[in-house]
Image (tube, rainbow, N blue to C red):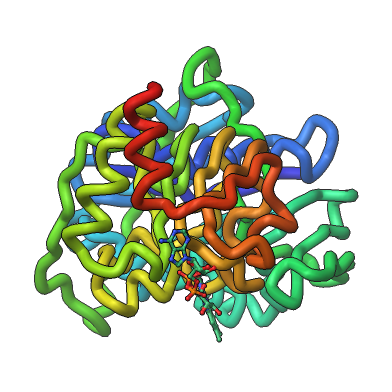
Length: 312
Ligand SMILES: Cc1cc2nc3c(=O)[nH]c(=O)nc-3n(C[C@H](O)[C@H](O)[C@H](O)COP(=O)(O)OP(=O)(O)OC[C@H]3O[C@@H](n4cnc5c(N)ncnc54)[C@H](O)[C@@H]3O)c2cc1C
């Protein structure tokens, strides 16, 4: 049984999400062979990194200028050219994975299995439904399983220590269906939200961008944490879109999640309730967030958070 993982990378290294997906690939069958497809322009280092990840037998490195930005149409076509021979094709359930996997599934005329959180056997997977309120067990009889993986549900394999080979693959021609126009990358010294060990999140209660930053940034700085937000805070413009945690935002499962002035709506909980330790600061004792919190502080966050920073 050979499983293909579609790598996410920045040309120089693999993104952490791919290490989680490789772990899921290894779980698909005892002794499964794992190949990693690294598609890009100037991605030699990323391909070498993929081959060094624990449990990877082979990295397939496909290089072409038109493959530089991971355009979904080209990437899906590339995956489809090498799909025959694989029992499983795995993507991270990230924006990229969610964009490419359906195209691959449609191309192979199979059903996509979305956001798996557990592999029960080679055909059977668990995945959350109804915003995480129920876990569905899904068995697929398709010859190839096209799967997206909820990365927080699988411990990553080690980035180093593997001894896979690197093989060059032939690029598909440019589909011409889409074109890269530009990108705005927010640079930050903070850890990436989805993979952070600690997340400090703020809700509507913060009241403004200035207060969001003034109150939460010192706490995040002290803890070396990523900043997150509820959708209400994002919609109000207090925090950028890519900080949103929840059903329609990022799924996080850090060791410590501190929710400040967040009510704990079901859609927010869907994105963070698997965090190892949850701390909630809210002035409403009835707030649902207290139902999932390991530690709850019923207090005004504008007093409590600065006091916490002071104490740290
Ligand atoms: C289809 C759909 C998808 C959604 N996806 C998401 C999602 O991905 N993520 C998400 O977060 N939401 C999502 N939502 C929205 C969600 O339902 C809630 O509206 C949202 O999470 C509320 O954000 P909040 O907790 O910041 O605001 P509120 O619900 O307004 O809560 C604010 C909280 O702050 C407390 N508070 C007020 N002042 C203070 C103070 N001074 N000190 C301490 N506490 C204080 C209040 O007691 C209250 O509990 C979605 C909704 C829908 C319908």
